Amino acid sequence: MLGWEFPPFISGGLGVHCYELTKALARKGVEIDFFMPDAGQPVNAPWMNVVRVGCPEKKEDLQRSRAGPYGPEFRRLFSMKPGKDFFSMGFFDAVWAYNELAGRAVAEMNATRHYDLIHGHDWITMNAGIAAKKLTGRPLVFFVHSTEYDRTANLSPFQWIVGIEKAGVDAADLVMTNSRMMERQLWEKYGAGRQKTRVVYNAVDACRFQCDRALEKAGFGMAGKIVLFHGRLSIQKGPDFFLMAAKKVLEKEPDTTFVVSGKGDFLERLVKLAIDLGIEDRVVFTGYLPDEKLPLLYAASDVYVLPSVSEPFGITVLEAMAAGTPVIVSKTTGASEIVRHCLRVDFWDVDEMANKIIALLRYGELKEVLTDGAGTEVRGFSWGKAAEETIQVYCELVGK
Image (cartoon, rainbow, N blue to C red; front, side, top):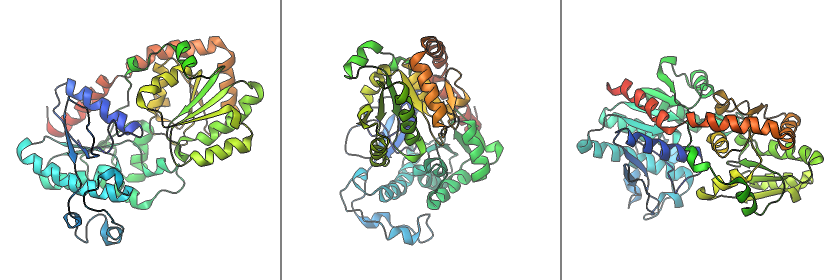
């Protein structure tokens, strides 16, 4: 398996998926070598063999042919110095270096390990997967968690990344993704044949998110009602719509606190927006939240809102449900395909978003119906089930 992020090096749902899925696969007897960039710190995953791909000692070790997928124009941007780790390099330099080295590493280890298949995640591993398939002759499956169209909210996709995604989809023997919405995108924008795609929904470790709600609210030092946004602060996730809805809610419920949890390139813009809206005294920006504190924040919150413009799935929806927090989710979120005990809204309709937030803050019976139903429903979204469905895809490639 080719990955990019893995706890403690994690920035979103991709890292959670790799951690939980590999653990569940291992429980079902799948033996995994997990390749990831070497960040110079230990990775705790005793259920599998973690192969940390290190940077080369010499820049010349990474030279590719002019016909390579990155081309000479990209190679001129390369500025890595010997001895640096991937996470101290520029992002695109790091992706290039890791893919070049990981593809070779898989081929070298296959000589003794005799892999049944190669499983890659998203565009940041696709060139490594393509190379490893060519060098080993092993079947290749990619899990597409999101595309460049999603990450840019369909506004300005970087065509260089779209090209890598298209090449990965073309090279894969099968392509997995996390919602029907994403599957249609693979058909329509990447030319994947319908017989080539498989949907495996994400899941949640529900037990991890069960906390004492009253205790956690006091522990965060915030009184009154709390409405939470948690996720990467980017155009894709719609945090600006969250703040615009907050302005309208505060006109009716002035003692409410709105929490924006996460990091990203939208932070400065969001702080300015809160000031421009005149609600800066009712908005708390937490910045990055350590993984162990996330269940506590969900439990302290009265409402969770995910107003994503384009969200392939949204694991945070399941996490909030598991914590007993009622959820409002945009209709352009993959999780809304399978979750019944939530309220849905168009991401751009801040009036309706505000109405639904106010309803959950005011009407205890509505909140109780959602949380009680969600508590039962979320137990059906297990990583064990996701692992079983993943193994079915593996069996299609290598035989039972």
